[in-house]
Amino acid sequence: MRKLVYYVAVTLDGFIAAEDGTFDGFLFEGDHMAGINAHYPETLPTQLREPFGLADAPNQHFDTVLMGRNTYQVPGGLASPYAHLRQFVVSTRVTGTPDDVEVIREDVVGRVRSMKAEDGLDIWLCGGGKLAAELLPEVDRLLLKIHPVAFGRGIPLFDGKADITKFQRTDARLFESGVSFMSYDRV
Image 1 (cartoon, rainbow, N blue to C red):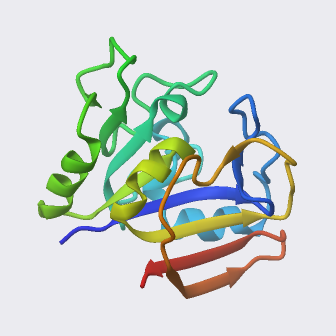
Image 2 (cartoon, rainbow, N blue to C red):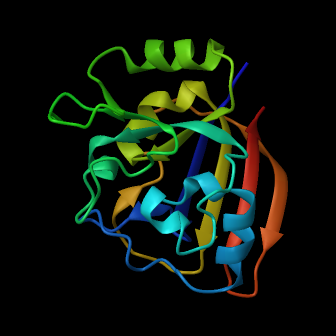
């Protein structure tokens, strides 16, 4: 059975983006970039894969990406940001997506459960915080790129009411850049 994996960058104070949805405060240079991209090449937007030398890199962990509306519609975003994956956007307002981006308008939990029962690689929950809170009962693993910055306020890792859910750390990688890559599995 496939897993739903929330793979995201987060600040020391628990935010995945600034209040306006931007993420400029995260570190985009440093040894963590090469280390993480080598293990998770499919998490780079399609247009960045070639410049990073990963155009032909096979998907190692994920074959499906699930995004909330704000994650999908980031300023300057692409209509099909992860063309090398099956792409789903959860929204009641998004329209006019290309054929390779499916919009889920209702019963997102049911759809995720159906996807988890399919054969294939894991499902990447790319963001955002509201969707992550709604899907927390289905999240099997957290992969957190913890950046050594604090935003003070912004969009939280889980933005909404959720039941207490316990995870155990399964891996930790520390980079000279100050970024920590932490893996947690549901207990």
